[in-house]
Image (cartoon, rainbow, N blue to C red; front, side, top):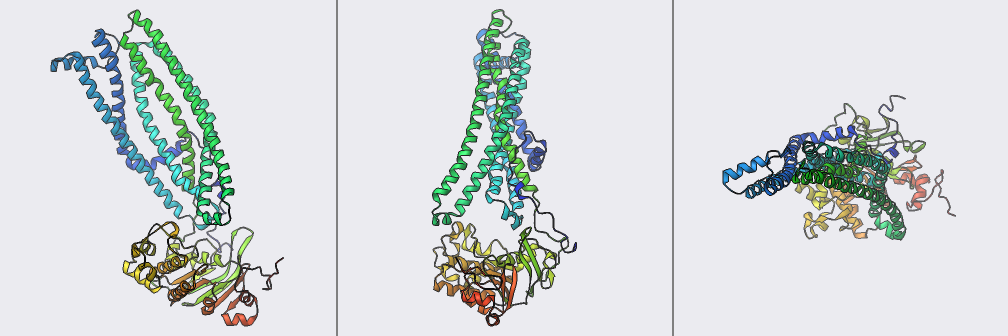
Amino acid sequence: MSDQKPHQKPRPDHSMFDSDLSGAVLNLHLFGRIMHWIHPYRIMLFISLVLILIASYLTVILEIMISRVLVDYIIVGEAESPMPDLYMIDATQWVEQQLDIPAIYAAGLIFFVVTVVFTFSGHAHRLTLISSIVKALRDLRQDLFAHMETRPSSFYDKVAVGRIMTRVTNDVEALYEMLRGMGSLVGEFVPFFVALIVMFSTSVKLTLVLLMLVPIVGIATYFFREASREVFRLVRNSVSALNQNLQENLSGMQVVQLNLREQRNLDTYTNINKKNRRFEFRSINLNTIYSAFNDSLASIGLGIIIWYGGGEVVQDEMTLGGVILFTRFMNMLFTPVVTLGEQLNVLFRAMASGERIFQALDWDEQIHEPENPVMLPERLQGKVEFRHLSFSYAEDNPILKDVSVTIEPGEKLAIVGPTGSGKSTMIRLLGRFYDFPRHMIFLDDVDMNDLHSRDVRRRIGVVLQDFHIFSGSILDNIVLGNPEITRERAIEAAKTVNAHGFITQLPLGYETPLVERGSNLSQGQRQLLAFARVLAADPEILVLDEATASIDTETELLIQDGLRKLMKDRTSVLIAHRLQTIQEADKVLVLHDGVVKEVGSHEELLAQKGLYHTLYELQFQDVSIDDDGHPLESD
């Protein structure tokens, strides 16, 4: 039996995809993986770093110009002082001599030039930083989207679309906020270290006293982080639950309204929203307490400077400009620590978001593809064979049981049976949406497991009841970006299946834009558009669920004619709902509980007086049938 299922793996635990992720602060592994997308823009990031270093240094220069140059040199007249001025007094004197202007004008000119360069450097830093981050995350989002496009139907059967949307949108946005915040932190810490050097050069004692407050901020930050870790995880998961609930309700709005579930669904959404609000309030309260505590420490530091520095000025051990410089530098000393604390909020969210993003990128569930796929000829004959096909979506719950049937090239097979008999599963497997064991489905006598899924899907045209409309024009929805389908070929296909008439009656014809889910077209028009899409692709095999509920008689006649043209000279597999379609089929396959009950032509099966005859008598309604093919009486 090992040669039957060489590619099958243990079933993945999809609950892990939806599980709560706590996020780990400073997860270096995640940072390393993010760098993969940032690396192509490293030169731009390096330029941004140089610019922020320049802007940060100029921030210190501006403060020295106010305190040491303006106050000490110009107002007080103390040019000589052991306090460092980073050569700004010398520069002011040089400008005085070169331009022969008063010191106040020279200082003002220097201050103006430094301010201009500072503003330009800071602005250029932000532009280059944000540009590089946006481009990197654009690439990450594209890679994530491309990865999720290749996940099989079995994945989307078990994972809510809202969860995936959160990863592609909200979680990537959280990474943007984190990376932008980290770039800003560089601009905060460069002045921090420069200011620290100048402060030590001015007064070691006062600097040490102020530095004693920094560990207190660090301890407060630590406790804030511990208290916030769980809160931000709950916030992120509640947002994901909101997105999932919103997506489910909006996509099924017609069902909601038809069943008068508006209030019940609103109550459910309100409960989820209340949980999110409660977690958000808890987060806000923690941030408020933390910010208020840091503001109090800053006020204490200012009081220490005024008390200690004032005494130093009286004793001529410090200049007035030096005291002012300390008050200005104190902000540079505490602001980076406070900013870091504020960034922890973003950091928590981003780490959890990073885990979720990379969990999605690492999810390797996919349709098995052969290492050396068989190359199909340019044109298939169209023979389809099911050999003892058995399949289940979940263990211990078989859907198809030992199904065997052969469809010769050009033949039409109609599949009938009550709801849940396995009809849709057969066409899904033929479309290669799920993995199945080897030697069970063949195209032109080639095992489908030896063919690449792309090659199979190019040869099989599928028209389901739920015909999906994409954003764009009618022509776009026929061509679907296939470069081989010209406008003329698309229009010819539309004419063949009787779609050209209603299209030309629209205001913009083939360029008419379609709204979400094609709601500006009728059900019948969407069905004809689906036929045109498949015919333009010109597949050798047609798979069709041809239900036409709520379609008027005139449109149904057009659909029947279009369907007849579409199936001409093609192998066709149809989940049949119309008696006329079944009568025109070469074979009818009758399924019940995943088992083939009968195979034959319409006339042959009627003559057998079996399950097909019972379904025929009941006009193919979805009813309960017993194992002997007899309808079960309702209570």
